[in-house]
Length: 196
Length: 339
Image 1 (cartoon, rainbow over the protein chains, first blue to last red):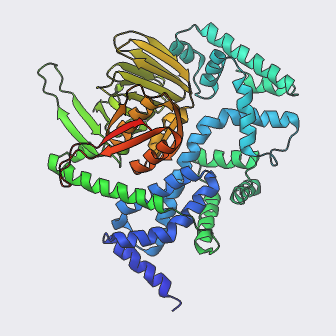
Image 2 (cartoon, chains in turn orange, brown):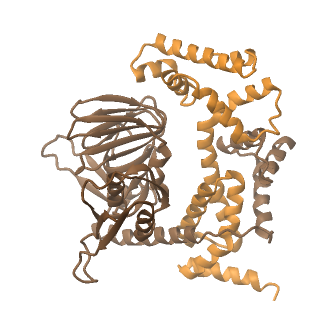
Image 3 (tube, each protein chain N blue to C red):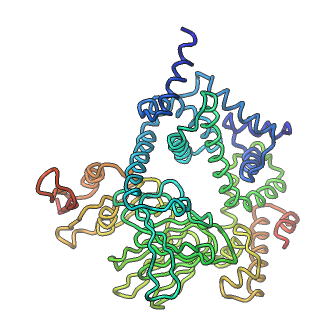
């Protein structure tokens, strides 16, 4: 009886290869929960993790004929999930890299322990700092830091002079330095951080 | 794999989402780095989970339902594709969930060059993901369509009728343009939602991140929008309304959710009409302007109507306009009146 389970699964995979949708559902029942558990450990975001599980199984169905063995089946699930996780974090990095940089210095200055503080709450704090910028300044600052545009690109895009863009970024830096001072941070690291 | 990185991965797995651990893992996975040891470590995690019987069960029936729906939909489309005879070369340009697409060879009667046009339609009551040749992606809402030239990479320009969400790959040297009936949107690289049905005088642009430029097609206006800004253009009155919004409410549809954030009945009815593909009648037309708030999964319409009739002083009637059960074609008709 002990090897009944594996045999059973091999059978299911063969049925799946033949296009049996009941076998597909059974395999979903067996693996979707574990896959969700794995993905959500990284994302910590239920909806996004579910979307990845959905994508994995949709792909599994599309490529069902290419699965050769039970082992290949499991690593196939894993590979698509991992690719999706990578894409998720790639987007997160684009969105949050500049905040991470600000936060690193902020925490360093405060002599706070980056191992103790919760990631999301730190990012929220940085958001609050950036949000204190006047709208136009904030926009130019984010175009330069978040979208990675250079000064001429921003000037061209917003149809303003390069000098104005430079001034706005300088003002944004000055503003953030002041905000940092008020929250008890010293200037030095902000100088390093916002130097361009 | 350094010991500190290993510790970061372990922390994440134990739910200790400290700033340093999340930053480190985000950096590794986001930059698509691949270090053998870390790869092995992650794979071990997966094998561990596979053999671990204490992994909590998750209720994922709704996900299975969505997968089955997508599979069925693709099957239908495949049959349809065969019927309209699409070339395989063109098909390879488009990614998975695309529903119907046709290749039109615009005869060079009016123009010199024969532009090859790729067109995608999303049937009413559904939504679909699309990917463009430059790597930009997005979602198309029910009853909407998008079209672009096959030489897309030379000039990144698409036209949209209906509602779509775009996640545009950044390319400062090559502007991305969305042309609609009343307005045109220009961006370099950003995420935004557009809405302009050809038969509807109201068009909308909502920005999720980055910066977009919106202009009226008859040069009535030109505006810059940054994140969480909404521009609504009413072409009949030639009027634009700018407002601050929570952009995620306007893109919830791509996840199969419908969000109403303090919207009046008229707006609610417009959305119902689009997402459920039914005719809606407000009776009387100037029914109390009650504000409605809800965040629901797009499912059977009765669920939403039930909820609405509890939250608002209204009653509703849903009429099947088809003569018999087998007849299809005419949409259902919804009449909302005062309680």
